[in-house]
Structures are given as structure tokens and as C-alpha cells.
Length: 158
Image (cartoon, rainbow, N blue to C red; front, side, top):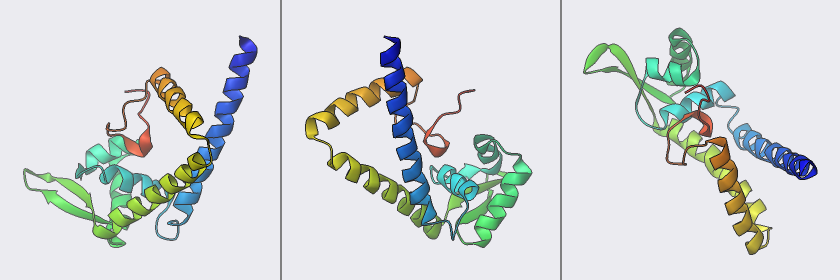
């Protein structure tokens, strides 16, 4: 049993390297426009209009850091900052069309590369992978894909 666990652990680690490489390549195409921390901010804001304080919490940064990042992204035309009409002390952030396109392009590249790899697998093995990945994510306590969280993974402390 221990040998089986080691073999599975090794296989998952290898697969994780593939997935990290795919993510890095998909972001590389946008790195002339945004850094990884900026892309993280775009991802979170892309889930819906966000208060600056909430954004800072979700990214695990100070509100002043989030404000500086948002200022840079707004200056680049990727974010729109507005005063919250219900509470004038709050700043609301949302993606501009250009910001949305960057998020969509990076996500589409990642999906396309994963789909190309999966297409090279026999259909029965893809079905087995669905089952295995669902069991893996369930064991990890991963929320469903419809849940909202930065970068596609939850904060283990929440």
C-alpha cells in the first residue's frame, strides 16, 4: 500500500508540474501588459465588482498595497475605480473591456493547452481521469468550480 501511495504521489507531482507550466505559459503571453500579482488582482475583480478592502483581503495584502496596484491597473486602462454610491468612503473596482480581454485570453490559452493534452488520451482514460480528479479534489476539500475565490483555489485558513 505504501508503494502505491508513493507512486500516486509521484504521478500527481509530475502532473502538477505540467499544470504549473501550462499556467506560466498562458500568463507569459500577457506579461508585457501585467505582472503575476496584477493578473491575480484582475482575476479577483473579474469575478464581479469588488470593494477595495474586500479585494485586499482576498489577495492577502494591505489595503494600501491593493490601492497602489489598482491605481497602476487603472492607469493602464485595465480597471475602473469608482466611489461606492451607497458608501462614499468605499472604492469599487471592476474590469474594463481591455482588462476582461486579458483575463479571457490567458484563461482561454490555459484551457486550450489542457484540452490539447487531454485530446491525446484515449476516451476511456479521460473518463477515468474525471473520476480520479473529482475524488482528488473532494479529498482536498476543493469547492465546486462555481465557487468564487482567487486564482482557482480556496484559502485553507477560511
